[in-house]
Length: 229
Image 1 (cartoon, one colour):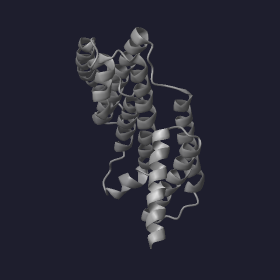
Image 2 (spheres, one colour):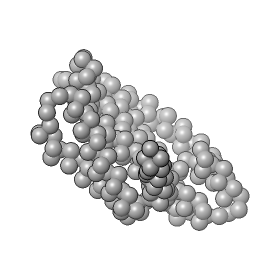
Image 3 (tube, helix red, strand yellow):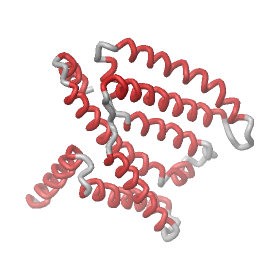
């Protein structure tokens, strides 16, 4: 939302370089935060579902499909705003209707498809349909901006974020068998491990200057309070 005003002004000035810079920054920043939130929930998903006290085992895959769809969306940056604020805003409108249509059609297919499998439920199909629709929407948005303006949001840092995510997940898996059966301790420990692995790696690899600035500000404030005490 903050980028909208800058994108609108950049289009008015025909500043494609600025738009491209915002496109990349929004992609990497949103992906870093989105991947961290996803990891925090995913490594604890079984515990969280058990905590409900009911059989919500299907919720694991519902979360997975929806979360992957959301990761695709945030990793795609502000593609939708770039299109809708350009002179090709009708393309953005068309893509929005396309998203609604694909969501409707894919739900008609995937909900009964999943219901035909033992142990599966229709809501999993609905979640997969949503993820697929979001992927197609962002894919065609990406394709339009790339073919028309040679704009794309991804870089080598995008791959590094995924590698950092896999490393963080792998570390949690290594310690999982060593964790006590205490529910709250397990939940807390896994979450802390994810943060302690993911955040330093992201920071020292300098994947985002904005992310590093926030971390620096946090620790600066933390030490300031600590010193005052």
